[in-house]
Length: 171
Image (tube, rainbow, N blue to C red; front, side, top):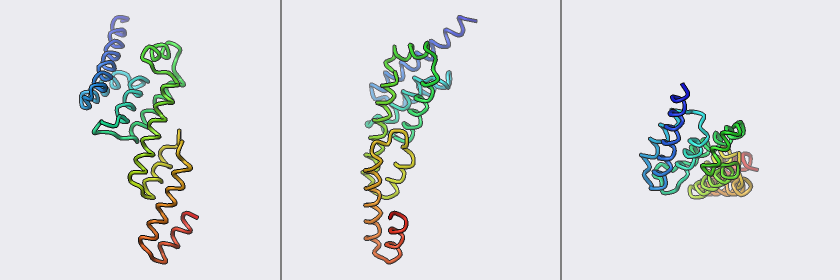
């Protein structure tokens, strides 16, 4: 029974290592499939969640998605808090500790804010403020930009109703 368990753990670690190599080489589809395989073997794998977050936040990735990266990053942080010392030691060998998880969350938060600024609409800033609440380093700036975008939309529409809605929605 012990041999089966250890080979299962080795198989998961292998899938995670292969996924990391694929990520580093920019083989996005291959990395995604390897990460799915690793997660299917152990749905509580902190390292797999960490790698999924990195997968979705890596800019050249055509599947770049800060929302998904945030979700996986939050899962990794949550599971890390409950990790045993043995799990933490294993993660440390893979260069993942609380600092790496916090740094990843900051990268995700920054990428989400950049995306909101690129879209530059009231809705994009509301999305950022609503969905990226854990790190939210740019909250104050996002609120100011949201208000500016909402005012710009009211000016563009140039009706009494648009200004009235702006004043009472975003005083």
